[in-house]
Image: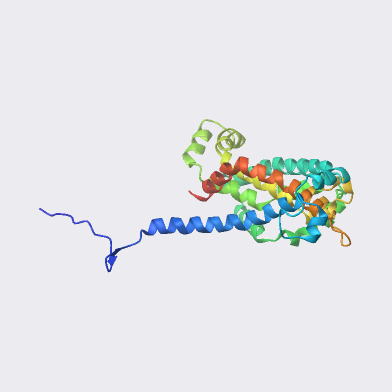
Length: 290
């Protein structure tokens, strides 16, 4: 009869070996804490600065509690600048970009995942190449294109470029490829058209990818600065990032007012992320694991 002998943990001079899994978890926790602090320190500094007066900031810029706290900078930023209009513009542009990107990106991803047609490999290669192309390289051609269509100064000049985002097509295409082929074939055997398969079979089960594309598109469009700065030439039609940049003057910088406006600008993004963070993680994990 053979007896299995369990191996003992290796010891060095009587000291038991360190658990590798536990050590790795602690290392990950330390790295996560450091990255969280790197992000939270500027955020806390911006909030503390926005609650102080300009005089106290000029005298003692470092101490966060010097001079006391007040909401004067927030009321000044709201009364002296059309921040409400900038909020509404950013919200309308970001919402329209989300709707069009989700619709057209999912249709393109579905076609690349299931349909077989001539030139499919070329289209897929162009989408992959678009992921490596910096957006700044497209500024001049897009400006000439939208000027020829007389769209400069309108919201459509900001919405339409985000519709053709390669990352949205890639996310949907990766998710659709993970759907069992038997499910698609069963729907086709039952007489469903490709449009019915897309709308009735695939879209209801791709909520993680849909949420990921929607949230990333909303955040990217909301934070966009260079392109709105070029195409929107009126103050009341500007978005939050462009409007906040106009508050900074070379001669006299109102630090508290600028920080208060910045806090008001990124609070919606933090709220969106906190509410939908589970959908973001689930969507990225689902599209990456087959």
